[in-house]
Length: 635
Ligand code: BF8
Image 1 (cartoon, rainbow, N blue to C red):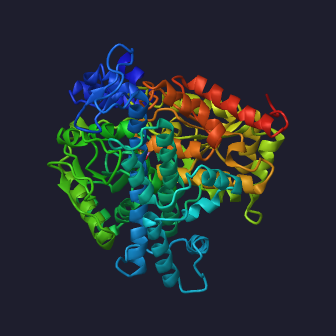
Image 2: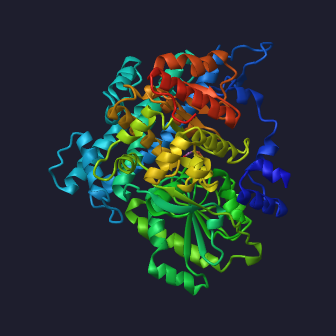
Image 3: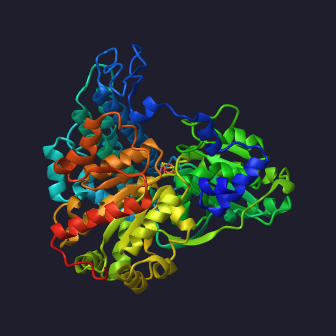
């Protein structure tokens, strides 16, 4: 009992962990235990496997080797290890973006009929940003835009077009430091090149190359993904939904979509509503088809359709262990290899769909935009057939489910605050200037079994809103806070400080705004740029009274997000494990101290959520003072 409580504060998770234990099914928490003690050199970033003269390791106590076989010291090794992760994270988000741009290209050529242009206004806005004449047909604009966007990946010179969204002062900083990304692929490749044996040995230069690569994700690949998904699938608007394992339904065919790319899951949404398939489901004794999501795919279909979210990263295995999932469809990223084994303990069919992500022995049904709907139907049909194989005696669906409101975008923040006819950021800026709002925080990222599941996200966010900080969320962090009731308008009354409460009540929003999946962190960057444009809060993103945090992070992608937040001038706090840099004091100091005077943002590592809130609030107050704003209205 106390054990599962320590693992997670979420009651549904605790319940299924007990079921897993009773049925002897191993989860991430058990596997973490079997890994302990984890490699100390790895944890400090002092193990180098870059070439085959190694693996080398540096003695952190200064008694053994201080350099590897090639002569690389702790600073070089730790920095190379770190920025390689930045490259990997950027590649993941950006390859996702490329696939969306490719889908746009296919639809512009008439090679797929399952997708269209859902947001013509956004298409035109984007086209204008890329210098395309919008007095052409929709087809011509689409074709020209997809070409331009795909060229951003292979661009060799100049700068990414989206950089122009940033305030002028920020653009000048990037230029001066030579960290304005040229092409998305180019920055990833160049970063990897600099980390190979015998290239860049200067930890500061390695970090700077990492910052440029990360910017090519935040203001490049991720921004392409977000904006084009909105164009093709529709820009989200505030929408109600439900969250936690209780959204699985006992008498329904439960289909779970998991991963990141909504191009496929969008079709699963459509297929789950297909009358022919619903009839089939009824034919096997089910009441219907219930689609639910895990991780960022969940956020995507939640934002656009209100599809329920079954859980965040650490709940992916637990969804299967409920015994009630007929099919789990996965695409790319954050999909535990362990799912294959866990699924064999039940009737659940795990189905991979992306040629980039195959699992040995797991059923693969390849998805392409050209055959999207057919594939989605085929998968759902196999789920319906599988319903009859469910062992009802092993089903245990926790009761926990919570309401939430999602669907906030940079455009929606405009509208809800300014009113339909006066779309503006002015009221938001004025709320900060007057001190009714203390400032803003972006709280994002994953779960990690090394930290009590959901505890860090929820404790931090509650403390922030209590202190009149409006919180913007994405990814698994948003799911964590949603499960604990923070993403409903009523949460303002219960948890928010008086100033934030007044704003939430006036416009009917929750004190915590869900902006979508992890690629949608790019929405935060654009929203911040609008705030500067509106006026009154400085000239650069680093002037805004704001801070970022990834309290339970685990993925390389989170490091990349941290890097582009910092490179955009944001003070960014990371939870417990400080991404294996501590073996180098020089590197740690560079990241947590020196960077601030160089790029305006810096990292902070912190192991306790109340302390995280404290240092974020202190930073926000420091920025308020620098802007000479009035004191916070309700202290
Ligand atoms: O991209 S928050 S565990 S699901 S990495 Fe993964 Fe982390 Fe969740 Fe989305 Ni983001």
